Amino acid sequence: MARNLVLLWRKLNFITMIKSVHSYWAYLVLFVLLLAVFKAILGVISKKEYDPKTFRVALFTLIVSHIQLLIGLVLYFTSSRFSLWADLGVGEVMKTAKCFFVFKK
Image (cartoon, rainbow, N blue to C red; front, top):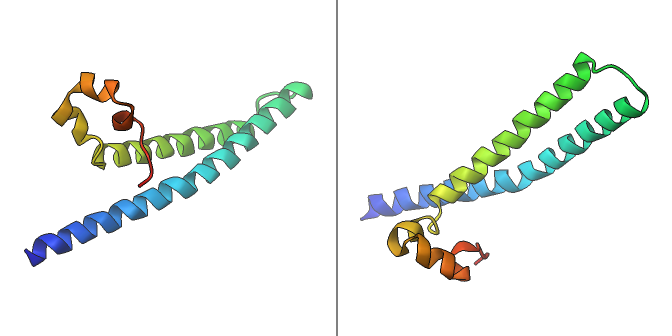
């Protein structure tokens, strides 16, 4: 019993940490995305060629945004809401707004 509680506490602590990382990582994604868009617009306006530095910024933006997506998928598939798909079925989950919208508790 005590071992199960310790494992549950570790899992909840891990999920909380991943949620924090996911929340703060979004600011990094936003910053890098704005930087990449700014560099692209500046390059088009000044008619510069697509140099390696701009390519690196765009590639870094792609990597950072995909990491954000993967963290979000991990959070979704480890959440208790995901088990509703198996328990209730797709039709029932889609009918009930409370089931497929994630509300903060």
